[in-house]
Length: 87
Image 1 (cartoon, one colour):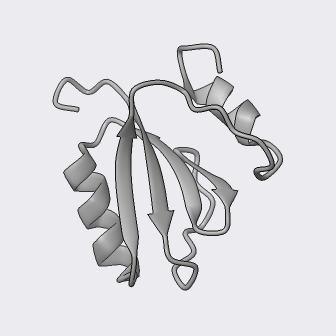
Image 2 (cartoon, rainbow, N blue to C red):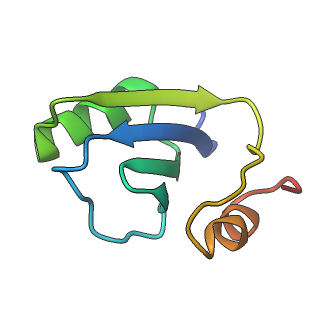
Image 3 (spheres, rainbow, N blue to C red):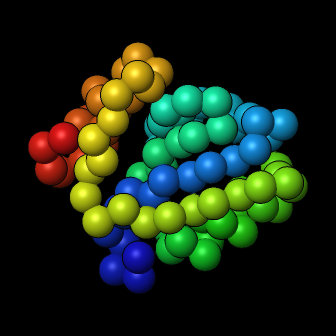
C-alpha cells in the first residue's frame, strides 16, 4: 500500500518454485502462502514472477485475516504475530 501499512495477500505459486522461509511469508500448504507486506499487489506479483519464473502465480489481497483448517502447523501463530487483528 502506498501509505506503508502492511497488507495481507494470499499467494499461489506453482510447486516448482519454493520460496525460502521469511518473516513476511507463511506457507499454508505446498504452493499456497500468506504474505504480509507494505508492498503493493503489483510489487509482490512482479517480485515473485522475476525471482521464481513460475508457470502459475496468483497474488490476491485479503480484506481481513482468513479462516483456515488443515494447513501447516504454525500458520495461525504467524498470522496472529504479524497482524493487528484477531484471527
